[in-house]
Image (cartoon, rainbow over all chains, first blue to last red; front, side, top):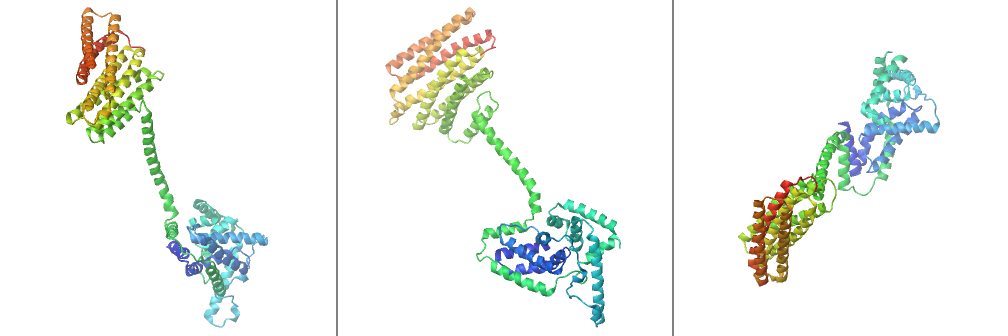
Length: 191
Length: 346
């Protein structure tokens, strides 16, 4: 159903030149693409740049009527993944360090001590807890192989199907399943 | 933290409240910038109907469907191409085949089909005459060929030629019984007469080089060719006597054609007499054949006389009679030779 709606929006964009269709596609995927690149890049600024660039590249590709997109979601992830690789290549970043302080939720960074409302205060605590969790998990994930980490993040964090992950990573669906199970086993040994 | 817990926590990152979300202001700002870029680079030209259809087809016909359909479609196409390609190859092979070949019956069947789809006796006759010339061409090709299959092919070719001449003769009789001789029939008769002359010539050249058994078949084909030729000449004589149709065949051409047949009969009588003298047959058989030969000679003399007098209608009737007698005598001698000779070589 999701895929059908994407195809409908793409159809409107390509044939009716409907800018709002592109806006809808952006709204649908900006958060997940941002999250995907954010977990792979060292800073929030870089993640924002790569996310914006992903949608721009997507538009450039869509403009050509000859180009086909079978799975828009997987297509976006694929562009994003390639841009992350390019970003690392450009900046010669050898080690990805995700600083938990740079995590920004929709409710921006919060100083728990300054919150006076009890409900806001509990939400802020939950956020800090979540960030600490994430930092710990990313630290453990960083010890895995690149392929393992990608498959785990795409599957568990972004909720992509094995078929979609296969498109993103340019592998077969069966191959992705094997990688996923090996990654889970590797994760088990790390814990 | 165990594996399951880790899995759950990773999945929880998806939850906006607990997870990673972009700054709302940045999202709006980027949205605006992107839409501006999209608007600026949006093509002004409208998309053609065909392009729209292509987009729809690509988008809504999943590649999995196409992949699933590809196998059966390709299989069906292969079957069709083999069926049609095979048919075309078979037809092509049949067209080039000669009597005795594997595909020759296919060629004959195709001819029969064409005949079946032809309406009108005159049109059928015309088509059959066309096939007859094809048969003659086949016989010539076989005569000029070499190889172990040659004797069997000559025999098969002679049999088919005889059968086709007989068919043409029957068709000629049917057509002449039903209607008067017209331009089309006269033209066809002229072609049949010419084919008959050519066939007789080819068969005569072929005869000495074949076995006694095949000679019987060749002789039968000769008889059929002569009979059909004479029947064609009869029609031509009638056509010649019909006003406005004299241009089909001139008087000289008809006379020349009959003279050729008379000469052929004379040669046949001479050959039969020669063969009879070479054959150590019983007195009874020999005297019977001799009587037949003498009758044929008399009939031939009468035919020549009528031809000299210019009585063309009577000439053709006398010629038919001569053919009958000569054929009987020749057949008796050839069959006797065949029964006493081992048919080992052509």
